[in-house]
Amino acid sequence: MALSTHKYHEAHSVYRRLTNREKTLIEWFHGNTQSLLDNAFAVSMLQDTDVKVLSVGAGDGHVERPIFSCLRDSLGYSEMNATIVEPEASSIQRFQDLVAKEPLQGVNFDWRCQTFQKYDKSEEAVGDKFHIITCLGCLYYLGDLDEVLKNLYSRLEDGGILLLGVAQGGIGFGKLVQYLQTKLDNSACTERYSSWEVQDACKNLNMAVSQTYIIEAYLDISMCLDKPPDQLSQDALAMLDYITYREDFVRRAPPDLLGEVLRFLGSECTERGPAGEFLLDESTALLVIRHEG
Image 1: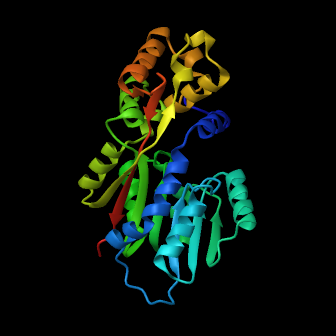
Image 2: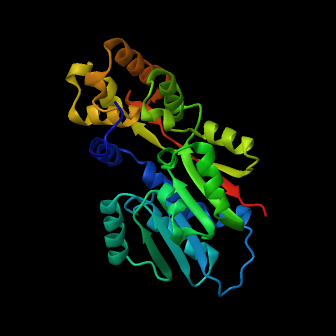
Image 3: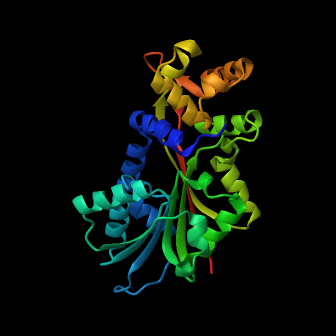
């Protein structure tokens, strides 16, 4: 059974406490936003033009806020209008609290507490175009991959860029995603995508990926693998729920499937750290797609 919303938030809170993926993503933008824009951004604007940014699945803003700061500083425009599309009201509230506590000068927020699908079909969004669209780590929530890519692309101004953050294909977490697609039938995890699936979809849609950046991150999942399943901690059980996108995976999975998934995770998706720990490569592939008019 796929994770319920409540169980997902429980599992994600454990994952977020233990991962350094968000930290490495923020650090990368601090060091590379200017070169990213120099290489990809090709919008001709007057200096007094407001930059328009759409953030899809922004969560509570702990990643997006510093990214907006980097974009604002690198672009050099006085005003930025940021539309935030996030379906969870509690996440929107935490994002609002964050920017109230740590304001972003010159950034004006338009809060849309709805799914991207609802936003895309709403009357208020008719004709909305953006210079930059970010979708970092949430692409698998947005429905059919081809459809969402076309919809996101259609909302770019000519020369604008779409930034997609997904698991790097073929290794670590991306490899696990591809493996689970063959093992967990009728599971929401089949909607998770690695960079390989996204790049293939873009190619089929004649949507060129102009740049690909790999932002390295590793997650210690030793607690999921160094004890028998019936002795795992609550954190380990929650982490396996998050990784497989299955509710109570250890308890509900058939023993043969559970053993096979854990063996694959330990032998094919991880590498050993200096202290013998199991490190899962959860590097982000940042795909940059420029709108060509």
